[in-house]
Image 1 (cartoon, each protein chain N blue to C red):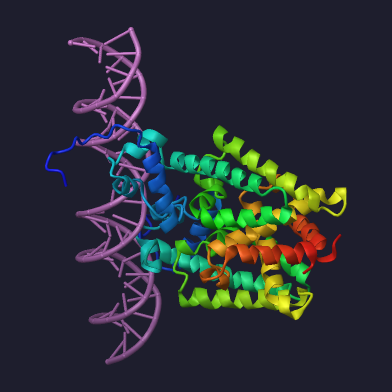
Image 2 (image 1 turned 30 degrees about the vertical axis):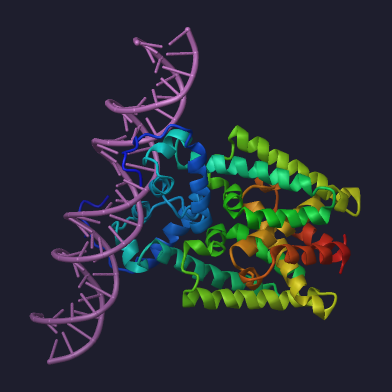
Length: 188
Length: 188
DNA sequence: CTCCAATCTTGCCATTGCCAAGATTGGAGG
DNA sequence: CCTCCAATCTTGGCAATGGCAAGATTGGAG
């Protein structure tokens, strides 16, 4: 709008802007339904700016996964007092941060052995394992119970996100998670 | 090897050959880790042969999803006598046919409203719902129990496939499914 | 034997991912 | 205040990709 021509060069760090554009794009078209150049146009940067900050496409997704696992670990920690609430938090995170979630559990899309990713993922895994530990009827079944609980919430999140459940059209994911978890934990 | 130059034109129907090449490629690099032209080279056809048979990339994945849901429904039907065995069959299908499975539950990759896909998916869903019906403690919880059972096996399959569980490196997915399901169903 | 529709190929173009080289900037050091 | 520099960002270019259009080949119908 200004009649004075602005510089064509950006100065601040565009890294955040590009990440946000990527998250928005993933939200709309899935983790692979967009191109780097399209992203650059969204963020109003040159077509090579993403490559400068992230190396390449899988580098960008690596950063998304790392940040995602950090946020995920935070969210699980906040609810780790009660196993049931932690399960609800798992599903809530998946639904409210679907861009992160859709990348995190598709290791073929990014460098899963990246140090930042590995650290964050292990932190989240630790919280999860700790929370699930209380669920096993006997100590010998700790591992099986952990896998069962994890599978339950992860499966619900995935089915909800990809629209396999009719409920995901208009329903409330947290309520669904709560009733499923109550049925499994308490038999009611 | 033959000294006589073969015709450069294929005659039979290449559709099957291209599908198989696609399945192999998906197996190696995930549902989006390959290109149509790479596929054509694999199947030793021209670079436009896939487009003739499937229209475009998402058309090819639509065909994969449709065939996948058919095979999936078959597999579930064969085990539908016992809920637990049906659950094991769910996981077994995911692991043994990961190419299909990886596409089926990513509707943003293909045309989910395709008639063939829709029919096959509804058939599989029917078998699943029928099998799970016996699990609810009270009739009012039928829906919740169905979602719970589905989530459990689906989550285990996903976690196993993307390597989130350490067990998936060398373990036996069917055994894992069986112990998880026994713990949830029988409490042991 | 002729012809045709289905099948498959070649040719083409805009777009993409990525690399190399150039441009611009704020800030450090004098 | 000036110079210089490293980080940041842009422009330019190339091979590969997806998809369309047009041409080639074939088995089979009549």
